[in-house]
Length: 88
Length: 506
Image (cartoon, chains in turn red, cyan):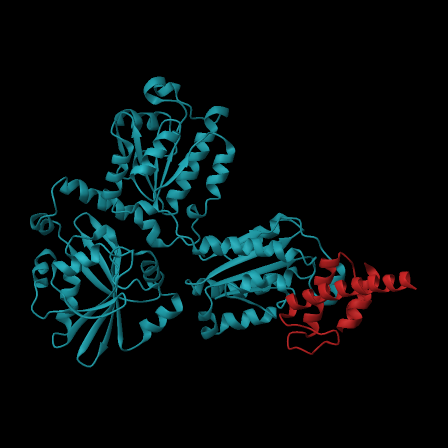
């Protein structure tokens, strides 16, 4: 029981670290604080080009590659976080 | 403001451009915008420099060339703007030559073309999805190129280069080795010296002034240059000082003769001790130690203050002007300037209206003049254009001539007129013609044109103009009217002695 809880806390921590560093990437690109629920077009500079900028910055930061399909379909914080988590 | 455009999507909102946007860069959203700006005068005046990145491949080649032909006319028309072209071209080098030809690189002096040859990794996915055909890191490469160009654009080039002879212009010591013994040839030992002289000659053609300060026998030096058929000859140097005096004394004399400041001077010598001595005695002089390696020449070539983007006609004539100036110094010798000398000089002054041809010289005068500059306003071309078109303001350039020849455009003034008053907002003179009563005569003329008006003059005290101007003000008993921080306003008395200067001018 105790070990399971510890694992869960560990997992939660990892998730938090990922989300925090993702938020930093978003802040650098959009110059605004984003929430976990934020989506494309929430801010004036999060337009389609802003979205590409975010994805390119994520590729750079986490050393991953998005496919062309992912590039055109990912457009919210949650979705991006999900795919990034899967790839790292 | 600066403007950046390209024929692909620049991802203008990407954070990698933040370095540029922090120094007032506008990044284009659409290539066609650029052509719109070029054709719109108001927008065109908003920007100082334009940076154009072109990615050329088989498909878009002809279209790009067509558009370049369109730009060519506008570039030659707007001589007060500067255009940087960055070309990414993997096809062939002959294409770059073709571009240079289309843009008329030879005659248009306000553009440079850079070929980006660093590794640029193409990215097919980015090209397809966002029309940005490279990896995102390539933006850093662009940044490097653009920032270094902006640095050069903003830097102040040296005016004077003073050289040593032995082991600098040639290898070996002339006095010990004799003319045959010194190294200067196409062969290994002498090649570096030949290349160095070649480079200096190129600098001279860009308007830098060359001079010599060397411990040597003067006659032998000219003889050696002639016999070895060196690239630099006697006529290339202005007021050379070749004798056995201390170098710092010689350099001080050269500066005095040419009327230049130590800040704008570079001294090149092979002896570290000499350099140290000169540096100690003359503040602010730039020094470079010569050594006969290739890396030295490369270092020198990459020195920002030896690069000059814009070579105006005035710069090319400058050599002649300074020659006239040194002739005048020789003529008057050690004596002080006396009324008798001035009367014999047959001095002539002309006031010239501002026009398209002399506009860039006016801007240059604002940028460069420090010592005799009353308000030290550094106008950019947009602001100055506004002033010159304003009906309340009068802008005149001053051209000067004497018996040795024409000195060119040596100064200007800006006057603001209101009802009963006229204020000299800006008044500046190039330091090479100071102390020849020109300043007195100009003020006499200004006052004489509108006798009924009260004349005031603005003076802003800074560390750059705190010597000559106060002296001038004191000499002529100006009335201090008001003071606001470092800004002073002086009233010029209606009864004054400026009319005395009239006799020195025809």
